[in-house]
Length: 231
Image (cartoon, rainbow, N blue to C red; front, side, top):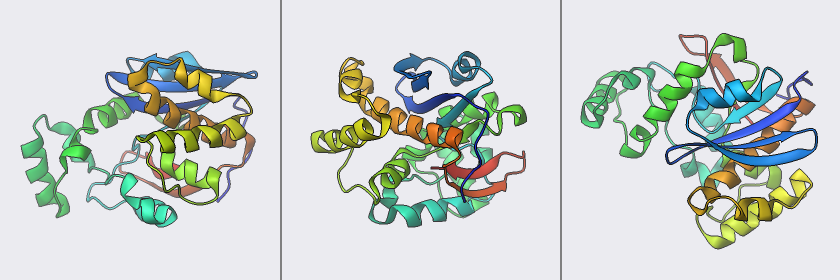
């Protein structure tokens, strides 16, 4: 389902990175990359006219079932493994993975992988920063799903490999209308893969502003946060 054009004017794509967040920001023809310690700082600095798409779950289920997750994996096909299982909301209250894993097994009938557990601090950070006032402009995205949409089909290369980065940069160059390779090359090496992901989410944020984005799912969780993915 396509969204309608918005009154937003600044596009922000955000990817979680070691130690913080990488944001790709475009406004008035300018595109930049930046690193932020806190997600709340991105919301504050971007202002009320920003469309922010972040690679992290926003709406969280109580039982481990998010209908949107199945829709995303269906679109990704052979690349479905790049979309990690979404933790249940109650694991955000735990500080120990073993205890959180046991709790998830009891509540949702399946455990919490260490990979998913490593995302919990950033999910909690977004959960603290997200409010109903920003529900129309702080949206959940997923880089590989956006790249699949941009490419017309899921990519077969991996983003951690040189050929995968080259393919993604080529797509971004065409989509963003400028040379993004130099922009990424100038960014600290340890965050370059995150920068590429942030840039494709910037493309998605631009689609939100233009009214051409696709929204999958949409059911609210118990706190009213949408279990929805924007492409």
